[in-house]
Image 1 (cartoon, one colour):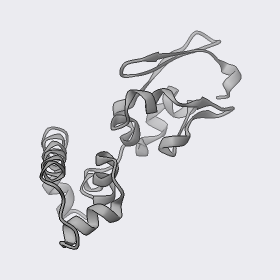
Image 2 (spheres, rainbow, N blue to C red; image 1 turned 90 degrees about the vertical axis):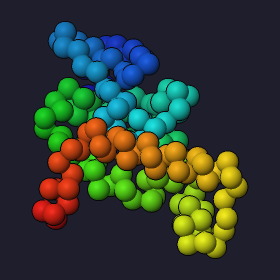
Image 3 (cartoon, rainbow, N blue to C red; image 1 turned 180 degrees about the vertical axis):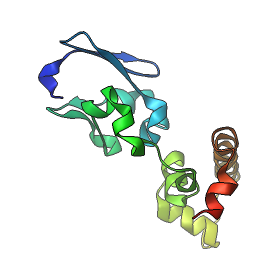
Length: 144
């Protein structure tokens, strides 16, 4: 699928609605893509429609039109639950450098009380997300 096939792209609160020349419609849901799920409204709206898909330069995210219209052909669009536990992903969600989070974790630096609460809250949010969306996670981890 190419850019010429798309006749309309409408920004929505939870995604981008696409309409094709052939009448098909599909929605790119922000929740399906980690970087978009945790991005601000401004970051989500700052994209370019290229010949083959969307590009969010500030988020370093590319999503093809094909993956929006044929999601079953692109099963890896969502990260596994193990990747949510990656501290780099936690740092991105906090919008801080991974090296700073690593320094906090190692004890080389001490976060302010406000930052400590923010880190704890973010980790608890991730835990809650995992609890709701990956109920079979312990079984998956033992299969690794």
